[in-house]
Length: 322
Ligand code: SF4
Image (cartoon, rainbow, N blue to C red; front, side):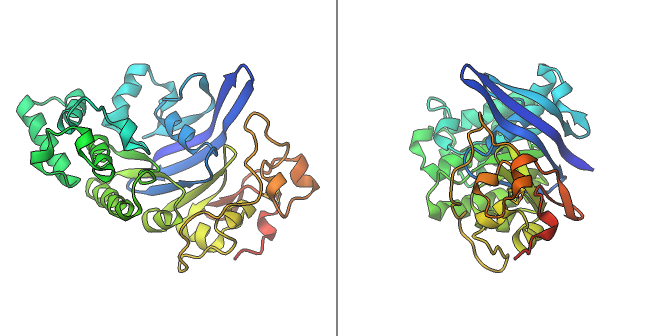
């Protein structure tokens, strides 16, 4: 059974200047222990989708449609108190920038301890023991537990953020570009650590990233997002070896293969459309080398190329593939 199943999620920001269509009918699913990579350019709606799962959309954003089934129950139908229980106890989020995620006036140990005390019934001694243990798992020694965030390097701060996210053994981790703010040398270490901890705790993960090396090394499934919609999703092999959507092919530099190292997304000519003024038809048509009149008039539905491999493109079945 799917641990998380999002169906047709739609999120809008109604501003004085007009409506921002941030997430437009997103559907995706994650099974127990699975990692789904959510890939796309800045502004595609990836972070807003993750925040929607936790019902943390900032004002004036609103979830205006769809459902988010967690363990078969719709998070959108739950009370604020029930959602509060799910955050931290069941689903945690690791944010991109450790500098803003940590409280500068609390010791790192106190920040982990606070989460444990909020979500578990235990004595102060047990909470302290658990704090030392979880910080130890991310490589922070006991003598550093009472240090403040400014006494740590960027990589060590992100380890603390990961410890806080894992403090209550969540079933699902939402990791939003967890290594982007770190030095390249530290990125691989931190990602390796997340993957090891994920295995140890059998946690499922939604991993938002631009880094195709990380996707290849960490993900079971991949969803490609463009202008608030999932344009292609499937297994790692489906996307890397049989990617069919022109946007996927463009992102991967035209010939994605698992056995050829691709480090970063290749920029595609043109810009992502203004979410306040999405083009009619397929939102990718102004940048698509294969656009036709049908593409300019009608938004394509999802076509299944093979079990679980879905593509939203009018020409999906006629793409030559890599
Ligand atoms: Fe390109 Fe048309 Fe497919 Fe959109 S539907 S990706 S414009 S070929």
